Image 1: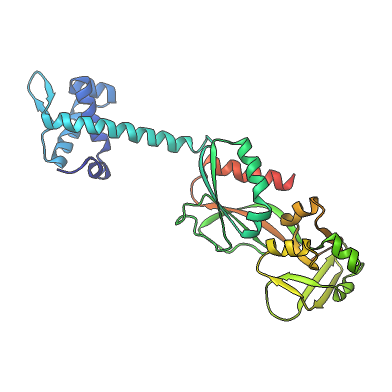
Image 2: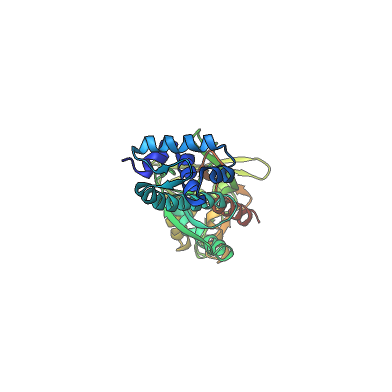
Length: 306
């Protein structure tokens, strides 16, 4: 005999509902009225279901219709399965309007260390019914394969075409920063050319001199070629090297702001920037995102642009 699951997958869910209605209302006529169908339509549904199962579910006489032993056993399990299916359907529909449930978010290490902690705590205070799991890694993770609801990615260029939906969250600039202690010992650059006399710390890239193109507010560009004294793999560790007095380095203002607020770092040549970029929230494409994803995305947009 086929299982209920295989019958449902075969498209017979309405046939199962019709059979349960006959058992519960006591007749095909009553079931037909409840389902807003004809008696002949309900009879054909049950015959089709019995044919799929290879078993008689109803004993029919000119005066009555009663469930067979197999029919009673099938009804008990089918009724519970239909209830669970109804609950699952309501939960899926509710997820579109009610912000609750598990929220899996992935972000690069820099953001996971310096940007997200304060934001996530503030968000969960506002939405305690949402449980958050952070996957902090510089390795881009496939959203579908890893059941990820939202990925945060930054780019100075347009994102490549992909099978996901990308929403701009905030724009930011790459600027130069240093610790107050370093500037007290070595002086504060007044002009981009002064950088050649300072210790430069950068996120690891090509070996050799690190060309920097700084642009002031009037659009004037200055290119500086300096030999870095410190290199590291990510902005989070670079920020801490700079806070320890390791030199002057290039950091995203979005990520470094907490250290600036704590007076551990200060801008260097604040009228100049090296590049602008955008932070994106990436979600699965297709239908509208669940409410838990939408409220988190909007919370980030509001917090980072406030």
